[in-house]
Structure formats: structure tokens, C-alpha cells
Image (cartoon, rainbow, N blue to C red):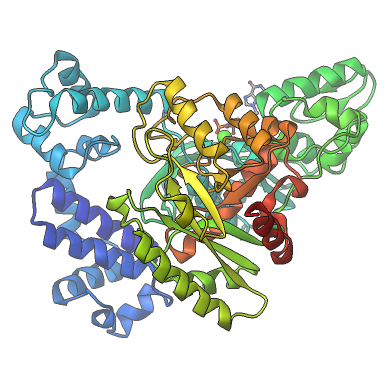
Length: 580
Ligand code: DGT
Ligand code: CA
Ligand code: ZN
């Protein structure tokens, strides 16, 4: 068992204990241990073997014994026992945004509700509204949440799918006689949520590769095991130790078929249909195995050769959504897409001054380790008290600390920013004088999500027009697979951003990915500058930026469309001029 698997079990124990009504102190101990183990820099096996578990803060005798059993035997009777005592449907109910372990336990104890289906029925009868601690509002929220889960099916976030897909790929690559191998499907196109992982291999000996695939340690269940196609359910933990299960399909083709299969299984389906139609116009037949004329097949060594055979420039996978990429490829008008290496810094990061986990100094160090030239600090503003938002006095203190750090840096700079709340009436959460003390201001909505569309739009328009607002944060407030964004007229927002020269953020936090790629193209057409920000709340989350680059690429953006592709000197100049 590796550290992530151990951490996931401990995290699940914490949840199961909470569902049993255990005291919070005991539950927290497991959560804390899970986090500590997830962050170990050495292998958990080595730590256990060396008898060094108790040197990890927060791990006492009881935890030491349990972790040792788990790591050495791969099982933990205490955990299995807990699991068997808990109806599995209770864990499913935890996916609802407004429902935590305490509420789940209450629902189970008082009404015997142990599944989403039963919960839905009870809400529809109105039984939940009358329950102590619930009320009509919560009942409505629960119903909304259940409808949302039903609508999304079992999709997972891009970062979760990529993490699993990369592990599967690494395991598979050890198999003999693999000629070429690639991830296809929505993972390759970097969609924001993923249903299943599609893997393609070329080989002249598929049998052993299929065997290796179905026997991978990540596999929970074999759904199909054929000669050239197999399907399994894999499970792994994501970066926050949440357990993720998803389907993975493997197809093996000959190396000659590979470029055609790669193109077909990358999709999207709509792109495939457009490609096939184009082939027909050329008197050719295109499918997942070949491109063929009346008499003989046309050879393509690489996927790019297939596009060339149809007189098209190579279309990057992120663009294959049939939103104009074929016409652009024909007319040599495809964008030169922005890349992760083009990004020289980011502007929306939190520290332990508000709700982040790490210090200013640690955040700066982490940004430098990524090769960034600058990092913008944007902690929360005063009215967001739940996130320890900064009072004006604390703003001044933080600025002193940033000045002191900047005095030590060479070729790197911390910018003084703020994520300033846009209040319900569209006013900013600080006076103009305080706003002027920042190098830049990210304006975001964190309250009153339920305003009618017209009111919400006016509220945000007012912020965009404010001369001290540099950029709009997470434009719709959506949380992927959990909650839709607030209702807002994005066209009006983007037009106003263009008019006032206010930038719009692509929030790269994989829970958000907001602005959606579909609106990036429109923003670009209107002349809006985009800025890719991780919304990091810990050092490791600065690297979320990569998912924002994926969104930008899906939105046809080039380096010049993205503000933080600028060097330190360039962005500094723009920020200084915007304050004049
Ligand atoms: P998802 O839902 O996140 O798994 O999205 P995809 O795009 O990975 O969809 P998936 O896994 O159902 O299929 C993988 C690719 O296979 C898809 O992008 C295009 C291709 N494909 C699947 N079904 C069809 C089809 O009916 N017609 C065509 N032309 N292509 C298909
Ligand atoms: Ca797929
Ligand atoms: Zn925010």
C-alpha cells in the first residue's frame, strides 16, 4: 500500500466514525493523520519498517498500531468492521453540498434514510422540512443537489481523471511489445469533467497487454476482457485523498491502424462526424481503422498525416469540439495555442493570512520552484469573516511583510493584491483609498448567490466599471459536479470588461474551471484580456494553473491573449499604468 492509499483509508475512517456519531476529537485525529501521511516525503512502507511512525506529529500508539497493520497486511479489521456497520448509501448522501456527516446520521437515526433515493422521496413528501435543524430551505437544496447528481451521472473532475489515467499509463507501459500508447477521449481533449478513460495501444501481440491491464493493482473490477478491447473499473485517490472510481477502456490495434484509431477515440464524436463528412467529400471512407479510397487505403504514419490527407492543418485535441476548427484548419487560421511554459506567474493565491494553509514566504518559494517570476497574493477581504478576511489594519501589516520579502528576492516579486468581495449591491468591500494601496484587485462574488439574473449582472457590471478593479474572479461561481453558477448575463459582463479594460480570470482551480472554455473564445473576440489563476489555498495548489491552461487552449487562446504570459517587467508596467 502506498501513502495515498493509506491516507484514503484513514480519511474514510474519519468519515465513517463521524457517521457513527463519534466525538469530533477522535474523528479529527484520523483526518489529521491522513493529511500527515499524504504529505510524507519517504515511502510509508519504509517509515513503518523503521518503526518511525510515532515521529509523525499527531500519530499516537493507537494510530501507529492500526497503520502498521494496514501497511503490513493490506487489511485493517477495524476499518472493515466500521464499513460493514455503515449502510453504503450514507456515503453517497455525503455528495450533497448542504449535507455533512451530522445531518446524514440524523436522517438515518430519525427516518431510517440510507440512500439518495429514499432521501429524495422523503423530500418530495415534505418530511425533511419539518426535521429539527433542516427546514424548507435545506429540503429544497437537497432536492436540487439530488437532481444535479442525477443529471451529471458518474463523471469526475479532470484533475482526478488525469491522476488516475497517468497511473494506469505508467503501469501499462511496463508491458512488453507496446509500439505506441496514448490517452484518448475527453481526457486527451482536457474536458473539465470526464466519464471514462480511453487508452489506445498499438502492438502485434495484444494478449499479454490485455492480461497486464486487467491485473493492474488499481483494478477493482473487470467489466470485460477481450482480445483487443478490455474494460475495467479502477480506483485511486485524488490529491486531497478522496477515493475516486471510474471506468477505463483499453483498445489494442496494429501500428498501421494506430493514427486512425487515435483520431477516432480522441473524438469528440461531433469532430469525428465532421471529419468523416470531409473524407466523403474527397471520395474517401474514414473510420477507426483506415482512410480508404475506392481501390486502396491511404497510408498515414501519424495523426497529423490524416489531417494532411484531407488538406487540413493539424488540429490540437483541445480544439476538437466541432466549433469551427475544421474550417480554420482548412484556411490555415488555427490559433497558436498558449502553453503551460508560457505562464510566468499567477495573481490569485491565498495565504494563512486568510483561509490559505501556507505562509507568504512558503507560497513565494513554491512559485519560484515552478519557475515563476512573480506571484500575486490575493487573500480575502474584510466582510468574508468565515475566511478570516483582512481588516484594513491587517492589510497594512501584510503589505509590510510583503515589502520585507521583496527586499530579499532577486528576479522575483510578490505583488500585493486582494480578492475583494463584490457586495450585494455591487459596491466593493473596501474604501477607494485602501483599494489604491494594492498593486491590483481581483473582484469576486462570494455571497447572495440567489439574486435574480438582472440584479446579479448589475452587481458585477458595477464592479467591472470600478477604476480600481483589475480583474473579475471566478465569473459564475460554479463548482463542478456540485453546484451550478449563479445566474448572470455573461455576454454583458464580457462586453463591459472589454469596454473598461478589466481582465477576466480563468479560475484554474479544478473544482471551478470558471470562466468556461466556451466563453473564452467570445471574450477573445471582444478583446478581453484573460488571466489564468490557480485560486491556490496551499503551496501545492499553485500548480492548478495547468488546468487553466487546458481551459484556455480549449477556448482557442494564444499567448498574447493571456495576461500572465507576460514577463515580470511587462505585467509590472501594465499594473502600474492601470493605477494612474
Ligand atoms: P466522456 O463522456 O468524458 O468519456 O467523453 P469521451 O469523448 O471520452 O466519450 P467516450 O468515452 O464515450 O468515447 C470516446 C471517443 O470515441 C469519443 O470522443 C468519440 C468516439 N466515439 C464514441 N462513440 C462514437 C460514435 O457513436 N460516433 C463517433 N463518430 N465517434 C464515437
Ligand atoms: Ca471517455
Ligand atoms: Zn473566491
